[in-house]
Amino acid sequence: MAEFELIADGLRFPEAPVVMDDGSVIVTEIEARRVTRCWPGGRKQVIAVPGGGPNGLAIGPDGKLYCCNNGGFNYVEMDGYLTPHGIADDYSGGRIERIDIETGAVELLYRTGDHGVTLRGPNDIMFDASRENGGGFWFTDHGKVDYAKRCHDIVGIFYAKADGSFIEEVIFPSNNPNGVGLSPDGTKLYAAETYTCRLTQFNIVAPGKVAPDAGPGGPGIPLYRPAGYKFFDSLAMEANGNICVATIGECGISVVSPEGELVEFVATDDIFTTNIAFGGADMQDAYLTLSGTGRLVKTRWARPGLKLRY
Image 1 (cartoon, rainbow, N blue to C red):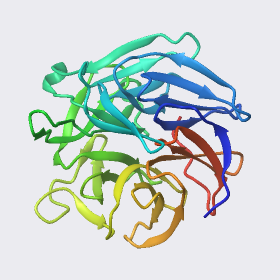
Image 2 (cartoon, rainbow, N blue to C red):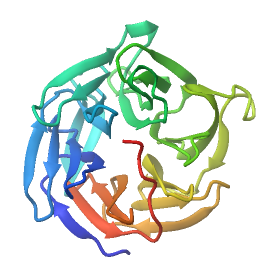
Image 3 (cartoon, rainbow, N blue to C red):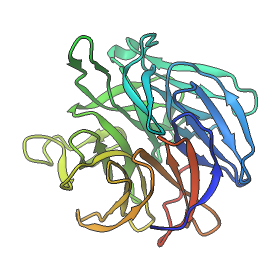
Image 4 (tube, rainbow, N blue to C red):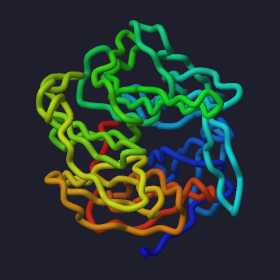
């Protein structure tokens, strides 16, 4: 197991680390329904309280945070782990929000009904190189499980503009897509499905568009799917094109090459290892969210991460 430095603990199911220039890291605390900034040494500051279930985060071209809000989960706390368990009793609807880091102001950018879309549980987000209409971003909708009704949402992968002018479901259906990322040259879109534990590649043909027939029977090209008791969560890209997928169950990060081969597996001690992000001058500082035990940790990575667009 790699050596990990504790950055912050006592977090309530943290996800979506965003590494800032000053060395701090912003995370969502999904169970606590807030966005929190963490500094080495354990200092924490609540930035905003969007409510619902703030999940994925990314800095946009305007310097604000763009948040995938899943609307909320119920939780179970047992054996030292905090675990999401189905749709929240007070589910407030899936949405995309924009957050001012300085003031904490939360702005609703997209919700169900806008441009004809349905948003159930937006999850992860990544900006591309597009500059039109304030820039463009891809995001996944993980959907919701309603145990009382014995139903599970059928969901997809979306593309939207940062100024609120455009949103479209580009890929449908997808089995609970979670992590999303772009290849260094911007020509490939990667998405990790949680319950199928499948990493899929899509060929981008234009901003917000994928080739409809790249894979067997549709746009998705199956890239990697491990055996065993494992589930995929969020992902981040290495500068060389490897895909680093947070892996629940086996506990760690699965590093997959663009050719679909397992490069390495970096183990952790939390069954809910959910996210990884890169920072530092050489982009080899890796920050991981160990969500079940409420920790944000840091380790040195073997290869540089991909520097994000913003």
